[in-house]
Image (cartoon, rainbow, N blue to C red):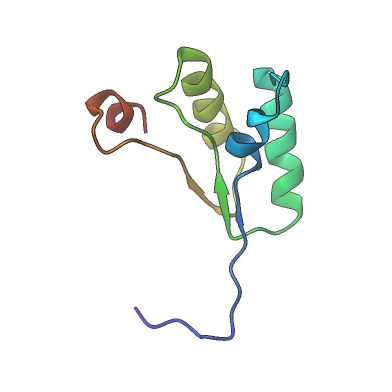
Length: 88
């Protein structure tokens, strides 16, 4: 697939990288609310998190996928973990 070299794609990682701030823990509802706000920014790709990391991350990613539309939705998965691929 050829792409226009002048097109800039916005790949937002807020929902995964944003939680790396020391002491920050987002609830499922907060993650969904943030995802909806990010979609309003017209990003091309939204990383919904790392569903293989925990049950809470899995549930949040599942809820975001069911709730938002517009950008391509992706998630992080480790290539060495079958659990990660199943969660993704």
